[in-house]
Length: 155
Image (tube, rainbow, N blue to C red; front, side, top):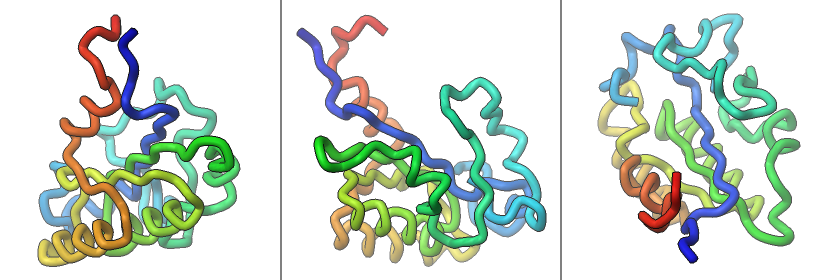
């Protein structure tokens, strides 16, 4: 019987907000950070139809691992969750979130083609650090096929 490779996966979208559009390198290629100051999610991300209990969590911490998020994540005592992260900035919020989730026992995937920073030189440095810390750095296409696992799945 066909089986998915990644079970119990969650997608975290980090700080993709309108105010960052002009500052982030290749912004159009790629949660909110203090929405009152930095504005709403970018218009391309319509989360209204997302199947989630809380699509947007406002935060002032650089890591997305705030109580509102961690309360929604499954316990790692039985099986670690696969947490997929994309967003900005790769060397700040994405890195701190990924490291915090690894410390909590989750399997963390960062999409190399889904992260960026104001300074393009920060991206490869952040991805190298994350690899060294045990985070899986992959592509959006690669992770989609890992989630699917088998072409025999009827979806």
